Image (cartoon, rainbow, N blue to C red; front, side, top):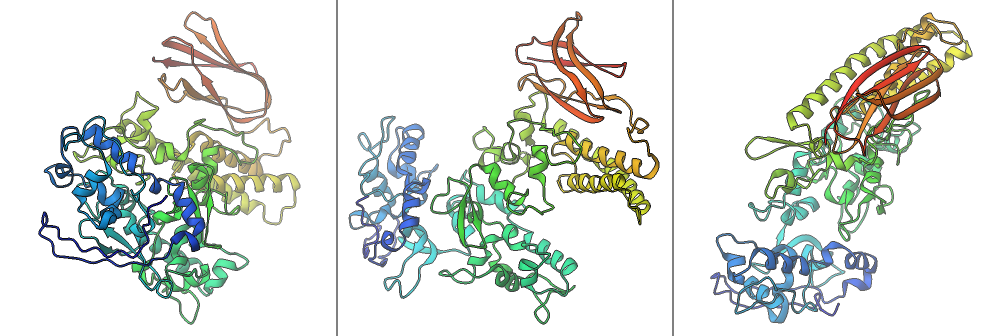
Length: 577
C-alpha cells in the first residue's frame, strides 16, 4: 500500500459548501508499521482494510442515477466516506466528502451507474490506523488517544471508551438513522450492561474477607475478570496492561484490602463489560478471537461456537459451573446417554440469528442482543426458532420454551428433594455402590442446573440428567437390588419433537426403559410397511434419544413403535413437505 497516511497532515481548506471555517489537523510523521508490525499485518488481512469495493458495490446498486452530492447531503443521504474511509478527505491536500466520493469512485456524467467501481485504490485509506487513533506529533513521547476522525470537519471526535468508538459506525452514536445497529443491540444485552453489579454481588456474598489476589489466584480461585470484563486490564493506561487482581481491586470496593458484604462497583465509567474488543481483535475484527486478560493478548478461535464456549462452557476453565456449551453438546453426564438434540446447530445460529428483512431490527441488530426473540418497531416479535421450525411462529416458539422451562423447574425441584434425602441417608455410610450412585447423583443434578437456561437448552438431555439423578437417589434411599429390576421407572415413549416436521427433515424420539434388555424402535407407514428400523440392540436401563432423519419420505402420517421386554408402545408423527 503506497498511500502515505501517517505523514504530517496540514489541511487548510475552506468548505464553502458547508460554510465551515478553516481547520488544521496535525499528526505524527512516523510509519505505524515500523513499531506495530504485528497489528499492521493483521489489519491488512482484516475487514477494516477492505472497504472500497463494498462502497463501490453499494453505489452501483442503490445510488444509480444520483450524484455524489445526493449521496452525502441529499434527503436520503448515506455518508459512505464517514465510516468506510474517513481520512480519504486528506488526500491531494484535502477535499470535502463529496469531492472524495467523486475522486475514489467512477461516475458517468457526474452520476453513479450500475458500472460504478473503485478508482484511485492506491490512495484510498480504508479504515486506517489514524481513523481510530489520534497520534500526536511528538509521538512516542506522547501516546495516541482513541478518537474518531470526522471526515466532515477533518477533526477528531473524542469517545467515552473503546466500545463507543466502535459504536460510531457500528451503531447509532454518529448517525442516528443508520441501519448498522450492532452497538445498540450490544447495549441492550447482558454483555453490554449489568455485569459489574453481578460481579459485585458475588464478591460481597461469596468472597467476604478475601483479597482480590485470593479471588483470582487462590486455591478456590474464580477469575471473574476473565469472562465478565477481560478488557478491564486495559483500562488503566493506553500503553499498559494491569493484572487481573489489580483490575478487580480497581473496579470493586474493598475494606482494608479485602471484599466484604458492603462491596459495590467502583469506577463504573471505565468498566468495559464484555466489550466489543473482548471478542473481536480490532485489527482483524472479522475473525473471532478472545482477549485473554491473563496475558493481554488475543487468542484466535476456530469458530464462534468455540468462542462462546470459553465463558459459557468449560473450554477455558474446566471447573466452571457455567456449562450451557456442554449441555448443548449433549455430553458429560454420568450414566446418561449422550444426546445432541440439534446436530449442526450452534450457539450463534439461535442466539445471533440475523433476520433477512432489510430494515428490520432482526437484521440491523446483527444478532448482538443474543436473544432468540427480537421485538420489531411495530412491537411484533420475530424468533430465530422459525428458521428451522417453519411450522412455528414466534408466539408458538415462546410457548414451547416456557413449557420446557416449567417442566424442568418441576422436575428439578423433585430432584433436589430426592438428593437431599439421599445425602441425609448416606451420612456415615461407606457402601461403595451407593457412594458411586451418590457421586453420579450430584454430578448429573449439578450439570443439569449449570446450564442456566432454565432447561430449554437441549431440553431432552437436561431432563434425562434430572431423571437419572432422581432414580439413583431413590436407589440409595429405598432400593437395594443389584440389578435395579424394581426401580420406580416405567416404560415411556415420548412424542417426537418437533412434530409436525419437514423442512429440516429430522425429529427426535425419546424413550425410557426400566431395565437393560433388547430394544427395537421402528418407523412404519400407515399401510403397516416398515420404513426404517432405528434401534435393534441391547440397551441399558435409562433414558435414550434417537435422531430420525426423514429425508426421502413423502408427506403424511407415520407410526413409530417401541418394543422391549415384551412391552409395545406406539405413537404417530406427521411429516409435512
